[in-house]
Image (cartoon, rainbow, N blue to C red):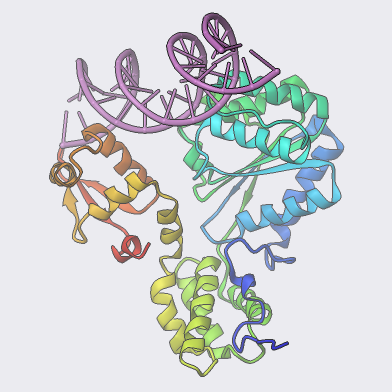
Length: 366
DNA sequence: GCCCCATTCTACTCTTCCGC
DNA sequence: GCGGAAGAGTAGAATGGGGC
């Protein structure tokens, strides 16, 4: 049988966003700290501390927790649940996600209840009774927890209060914003205590170089990626905030470019070319998750910006049956929160000036 | 027991109102 | 023009009653 060996990639999936490596270099200290908090809670459920992880994007926060969760599932009786609050950002959504995972992993024979037509309290009571019966130790990770606030913040209070029902539950909250809980209801803040804070700092150039080298070693065929290309990529990735995702995405694109030109060698030129696109990798992944309404709205914003009243007129002209003024503002506020646009108020009591933070081609390519 | 349909219940979306 | 709050509207699922 004919077998084809890729001349560029050896294990391309190493560069995919959902790939969790067996070893996370330069995050051993943080992983050890988080694991130790979880393990001591497992040994002594009376002394549970919630965990608050914060730091710049692309510094391995999510990868660390997913790495720890994999070990927890393999080696302990804990019941880890990972929830991305960008997608699941209501209290009902969070409780339903926990119940869904519980019935999938712990009680696979039980029918998963419907989400619609069931009261939140009813669903929460079901969660309480099932957790009580099963005696599992839930470790719930709320990634991008800032997207849960303020609408879904009540669920933090509810989940923390499970301990009053003698259910040992540990929350892990991940965010890029260290001060995310500053304006949260004091009642909710106090319910989350005690909290252990685990800060993640941006990678240094040397650390970035090593991380890229390891990825290159596993993902590419031997000798395909030039050393100068690795060094250049590490420097630029650090200048852009130390985001490993940019480096990973760039390597993937550069590999494809090297294949296209037929020389099967990744050079600095390939990296430069790939970087022009991958610097917007994060924005692109956010845009991919937007609802069709949000995409329609952002696609209408001109490259050179527009004042809100003018934009509302434009929107209504293009989508006469679309949302009204207040709702449009609400959607724009959300897009601003995602970092895709900037809303700057011009003058005292003046209108908002809306500006795109990413090139328009990001929306049109999807 | 099964099917159909109206009713009920719920979370979530969206509009309207009003004060600043 | 903006933003918070209240309430109406909507979609989806469960429930219950009637007819076969």
